[in-house]
Length: 90
Ligand SMILES: [Zn+2]
Image (cartoon, rainbow, N blue to C red):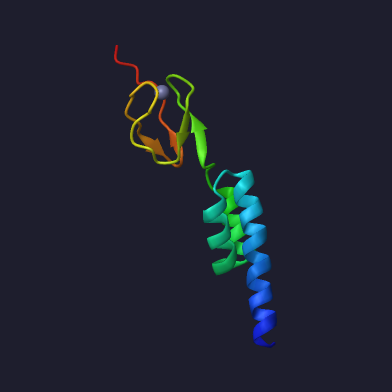
């Protein structure tokens, strides 16, 4: 296997990872995982959380791991890539 083939495979893995990442709204993470891990990186990406998710309080778009909602100001607790919904305080 020459250097061109190595580079070409990495580019293909990265491009596919980027495309998958776009679907999960995390294109950069997808490209990096694709180049570093190849098909395993794609799998990690597909099984992982989406890059954006609606705010459980107001429905505005949140970026993954964002600490506070920009629209309603609610602070977020993230559990396994999902924001925790309104807490019952009765
Ligand atoms: Zn909100």
